Image (cartoon, rainbow over all chains, first blue to last red; front, side):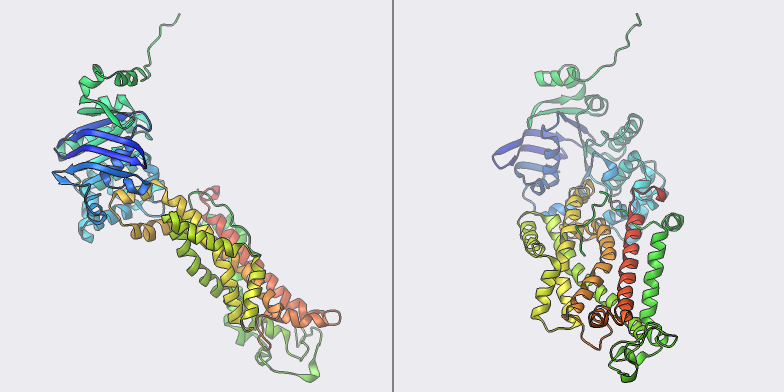
Length: 258
Length: 298
């Protein structure tokens, strides 16, 4: 049980936006968190990162990482944890990199921040770039000179180089076109199998969730209405909301010409 | 005078390098002209003792038998009411106005930049407090406020610098606040937080460099404005005092003789015009060059 969320409540004042009884991500497991927009998926990731207060929300309940309780930690302790043990990648890689710095400088700073020496960071950055199938030469470019898919790989490379145990992927493929999306999904699968990384994969795209995830949790209005093995939940949904979500997935049928 | 900051594209660019810079410069002759003019002014300021035919005339020298002579081969710009060579005084004046502008803008940035960053990035009550204070300063017409400050302090160049700087910084605070607030909401700042970077570090290594480009452009555009304001204060007798060869002061003193000796007012006035115009060209050109939406960069 790498990451375990129990009794998590996130509220803005009186309005409770997340109310999760239990959500766990095991070692080398990809758990999908799916649901409509505004169902509380992203607030859950913010809470896990210990950043919910930056948008003015309050958090109650328990979040543990390898049995370490995170909710009581100070910002300083959380800062050390973020990036190094819990990494996050976001929806639009093109804007997730500061445009005034070279990509390599961002990677390098991130690694140095978490205690690597100059040489270690350079070496680890090159190695991680190769692991995500990018040329280390790209580190010398500016974010605007890389494609969205390449940048998302660089973001994943940072998590790899820092040997993060848990990766929070908040809609990491929504802004990418389908072929690039498939590459990023392959990469996540490989991370799970080779590095034993645990991934909380947040998406509203049930097709992607079905393809990638080991287990799925369906979220609605802050609550998890159903969770279980992906194959079971998505083929034989027990909750009517899951069924409605599945029914809403557009299906392209070949129609016979008249 | 001071104008509301021009809206800048959301993504502020960095200075292009290498071939892109050369292409940008070729497509932008005004920037080259502005830069060349600025360098010329600086060169004149530095080399004043070598260029000026009568260096002593920049000070308190008097030549009772050569007053108000029209331009001639000996005195290119004529002489003033106490017989000093106006050409020499205009050249020495190049040491004053640009220096005043640089010091004023430096002070305005030192005050305005950090306040704007804090207000924009942290928001909340700090933002409210800082912005209400700037609103108070912005509620007065700038020249009037500068006049009020200059009136209570003894007339000198230092007074001019303080008076203008006090009226100038709120514009920079506003400009930077808007930028910083928009940068603070960008995903890469969220990514910084997710990487465990501290707030102060995010502020100075990520928000600052992503917010500063509009300020550099605004500052270069404002050099001309500050020179004009400083000249206006000197013209009104609140700034530099005789015998300082300040252009604004020379125009003020020459206006009594305008009908009989046009050259006393005209040449220092042209120097102000040329300097303000040159720095404005430079600022405009710099903005074009830094604007990533301009097609010539690609």
